[in-house]
Length: 120
Figure: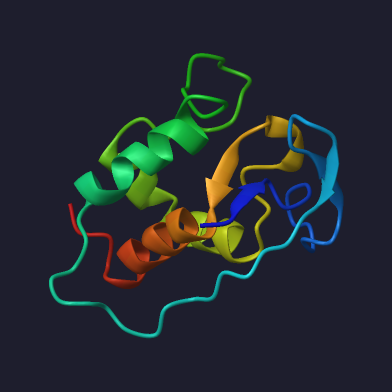
């Protein structure tokens, strides 16, 4: 598993540098959109811990009324599935300055869940 420390800012191209806690390292993002849904399909319980750790805890908790939209429930995440898909594919979330490590496998898990119709 390759840990990614963001992939640039929102809408970034994945070619910027970021701080991985021990200095500046080049970032890469090699995730691709799945073309089919596996059997059995993943469910929200399979991706919820990834979303909680990498999205909700650092930024999307919904505690700041002026902050980013919350990702604290299945409904929140499902409502934003198209945006989340784009952000996972272009590696713009989590942003490099969030200090959150997300692996390619974790990105792929979220993308697969979305490809399967984001079952609850």
